[in-house]
Image (tube, rainbow, N blue to C red; front, side, top):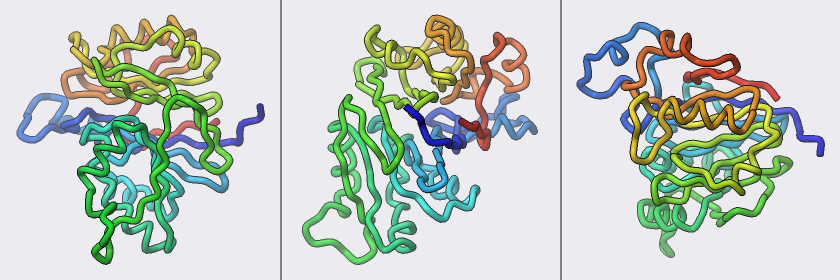
Length: 258
């Protein structure tokens, strides 16, 4: 299959508290290196005709402003935690600009959370100016967003099912600490993968750095970028030196071409 050329932009690469974390004076949170400033984790994928975002974080508005995004065709959600979905209200600006609803793709757990947290967008009697959202419930079957084929990959965030996504040669996974063997098969053959690597110490529901490196090597993906990073991982410049060839820390604003 010929996949259309596309660009990936990392809108945010931080964990739920972001980096710097409020009130923290550690060397990472006070670093002058811009790569150590991390908004909540999200990516944008752009083809010549289509723009989609994976997860609308609490930083969604600023992420869109920072890159001057004028057009957005869809948002795809990985799971219903607030650091991945709290920014959905700000699609109102795109509704106004395009005079159309925003296409939102999510699993049933995330749909329940969206309908609860943004109840006013789904009310039978809507107040003027609320977000206009067209929900599409997804599971594990591939689906299209315009010309982009999206292949879900089921991963586990402790006991919560989370969806990663494969876009042709590129796989994006965040908030995971376990992937079943049959789902790993969906990833194999990717040219690049994004995985969460929260910190060096073991964590109950996220891959740590050692686990993320081991998984990349097991899957034999030639290029890997780690995201959902906390200040506990360490300085970007120092950790980057420790990583094997082909494995990198992602940072806000990093772009990849496919």
